[in-house]
Length: 197
Image (cartoon, rainbow, N blue to C red):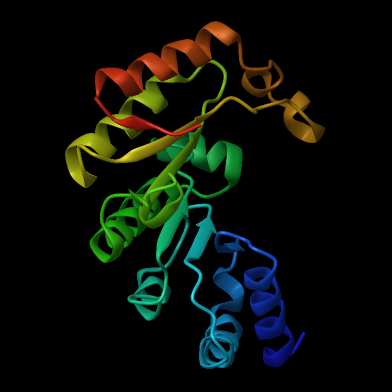
């Protein structure tokens, strides 16, 4: 699509009553998004912009978005480099995600809702609970509480299902057990984080 077509889609979403423009895994097309936004904003776009990503973001890209993105919605997948290397072939993921989430928070602050309970600005961090590694969850939640904000909003997700090559890795071939998910929610409450479902 060209810039005008992307802008047209954004304006159409606004016209039909969407609450925001949700840019999913958009890192590789940030220049095109910025060009389309120039056109859409000039034509009346005023919806909040959501940057929905894996957390594996460059600080340089995020700084280009300062003042443009209203809501950052990153994942924070793994705390330890050994697990992120084993499961995602990205040993630097934890450090990159920590720096990226700090930058996001510096730009938009804590999540804020309008009078109808719809998010309009701020940071919402998602964490997919994985089977057998609740210590990773605890470390991530502690980081959010102590190094981001005691008011951080988190989405603790239970959707992990072993698929494809996951069956080749012993630690990944089991689904998340309900008790593990309950423990993860309890951890978030222990840290007094705001849980969003």
